[in-house]
Length: 243
Image 1 (tube, rainbow, N blue to C red):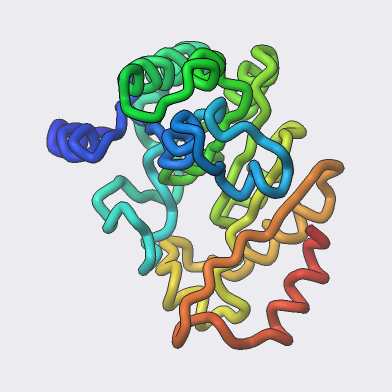
Image 2 (image 1 turned 135 degrees about the vertical axis):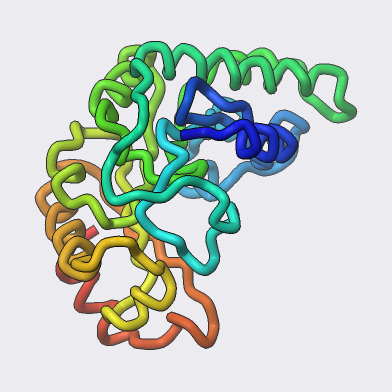
């Protein structure tokens, strides 16, 4: 999945590539809290210690080409998994090791609080929202289970194109679905999905979310002039999934 050119580009941007299709990167909020500053919204809303949070993904690939994607569409895309698959235990171990390696690089940086540095070496939370679509990885259930075995909480974000994967996903700490539009036309214009039945998959994902006996969240990225209207239609989608 990861070509030499993509590996080089991502490495320059601060990513550490894991195996053949995964990555980990130190979040700016992790860096901020290591330096005694504030944390991310998960810290504000849920008390998560941002300096102990690892941001990773088991799949750099995605089924959308969203107009606001921060990867600028350089990552692989596809409607199904067609790449060599790395073992989940290997990936979890590599992600934790890679995260710790990046934490170590913060040692000696002005403002870093020693107690937070020490705690940062023992991640307690994992944000599966780095880039790509994490539930495309065929072994995502085992991947999150291995994190839970290590007492690491899981916050997973999906782009709502794989409803069956949502149904089959085991209970995690918090499951997010990206709701980027309220109508089929707007979703197609913004997410530029590869699937022809993208709207059915989107609606199916929201319905699947409603069946999950766990904490669920809609994540809305609202862009003026693109998808910041249609409040009535958004309300219908919220009623559909009951996040």
